[in-house]
Length: 151
Image (tube, rainbow, N blue to C red):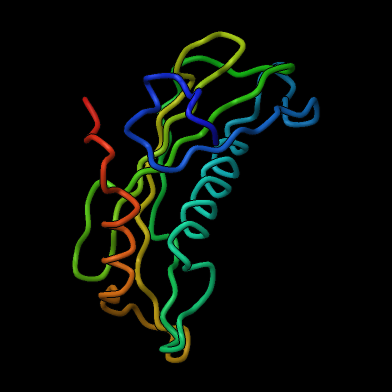
């Protein structure tokens, strides 16, 4: 994304723009809550592309979503374009937490905040694994220069 992102998204090293589709709205005429999790998935994958971890490493270690949550602030509707930021906020031995922020261009405000916990997973033996050092380093490089979130 260009440097023209709103200041509220400045702490996020990865930010993608998604045009809201008419079909993403539900019977209540707003974007269905489940769609936000797809938006988070798209931003997460863009982050993984940035750090070069879109599949399992040669070691067989990839990531798996351990949990996800979303706090809705106001409903998104068609037409609009939502900017979705992704930022790693915490790293453990076998997992890390990724925060997401949803910004409505039409309304010029935050529509939601989300969070996911990604677990390092050894797909050869179907068990969690230690987060590889190379991934820790790539995350640190991606986050370098991006300020922490003001909560």
